[in-house]
Image (spheres, rainbow, N blue to C red):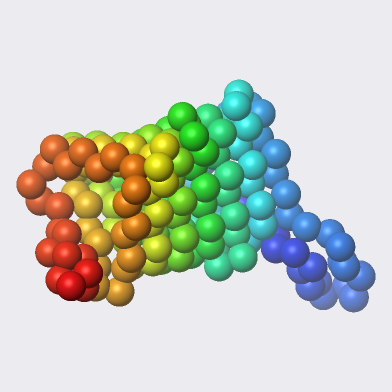
Length: 168
């Protein structure tokens, strides 16, 4: 499944100017098979839930705005922009790789055992943000972690050394 980006092209020479790939979710999206690629905009409203049970990729043109719950149960890569709104939750049960922008104004919870957040982009934990790490938090030297919220690191395997060194 691919959510096409703004002004996508096609082989039939149909003018697609002004047409955008937009998903407004007020129900439940459960991705179970193959790769789900987002090149457009996904808005997860207050009644919406998103759960990936197979690979999910949000490309450089992809945006996701979360106003309820996203559960990451398989590989999830963000190369676009994700905003987790105030009081809302993203639960990371498998590997979540952020290579661009992740704005957390809500709760970002990394589960024990297989939960892992790899950040080589920009992770902004805003003033209302709560980042709970019970798994693995890896902020690489190419990544930026801006924290003005709450970071609760329960697991000692967090790799903040490179991040601390880069802040000197």
